[in-house]
Every structure is written in C-alpha cells, then in structure tokens.
Length: 202
Image (cartoon, rainbow, N blue to C red; front, side):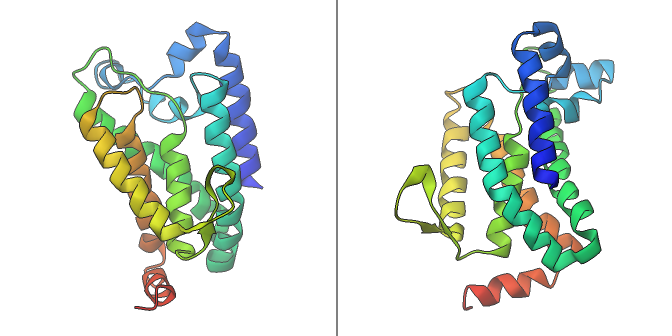
C-alpha cells in the first residue's frame, strides 16, 4: 500500500520538524533559494513537512481516504504499471505545483510553503476522473455529493480565495494539484477521457 507508506513517511518527517526548526527550514519550499542557490531538493521535501498536527492530520486523513481508492483504480486500469502511475500522479503534482511557485515567487525572498496539499489534491482529482459520479461525504455529513460537483466547487473556491490572497494557504498549489491529478492519467491513457464522458452520460 503505497498510500500508507507515503503517509507514514510524511507523518514521521513532519513530527520531527515540529520540534526541529532547523530541519523545518531546510526542507521548506523557498523559490528564491531554489533559483539562486540551486537547492532543488526543496521542490520535493516541502511536501513531507507540515506546520502543525492539525495541518498534517487534515492532509493525511484526506490522502489515505482517497489514496487507497485511487490505488485500487490504478490497479484496474494500469495493471503492473499501477504503482509507477500512482507515484507519477503524487510526485508529479508536487513538482508541477513547485514549478508554478518558482515562476511566480522566485523574486520573493520571504515566500515559503510546506505541506502535501498539492499532491493530495491531485489524488482527489484523479479519483474524480475515474469516478466522477461517486458520492463524497464531506466532514462526516450524511448526504454525499457527486465527486465531479465537489471538484467544480473546490476549483471555484480555490480560484476565489487565491484572488483574495488574504490567508496563509497556498491555493495556487491546490489548483495546480487539481489540474495535474486530472490530466496525468489522461496523458498516460487517453482512452480514460471516453470512460469519463460515458460515466457522465454525455
């Protein structure tokens, strides 16, 4: 179970960083330092670091809940390539989100970001591609909403909040992750788009 392994690694590293500010700073995404000092490792390592337990648990609970389902679906569609495809979705989203930050924030010396939000969002949107009408039950609510509707609402909210830019959440990483999670499986297996459309009854 790749999802569980990634989750455990993330929890261990984040837990260590909670009490080690030097390690936290070393692993954080800092576009300015990546460009000027060529610290490329930060592109990946920031996704294994979180600000606090609340931040960590929210991401990891969402990740495990959706990730295990996407793992099984990848097994169905990609057979022996399921694990490489799943890892490509996850780490590809981290890199894709980081590149966007490098382009837009490289001159900002104070900008920093941590968290697996981009990768987790990618996994969620891969699920939406695979199972667009599957019901998602948010925050323990008894009434579920179709995955595709959740995706549309999520993108709309992220675009709105990114435009306001009055909180500390990297909404651009969410949007990048969503885009990557949806298109990545299609790049590998274009016929999935026909499956997606047919599930919508179009």
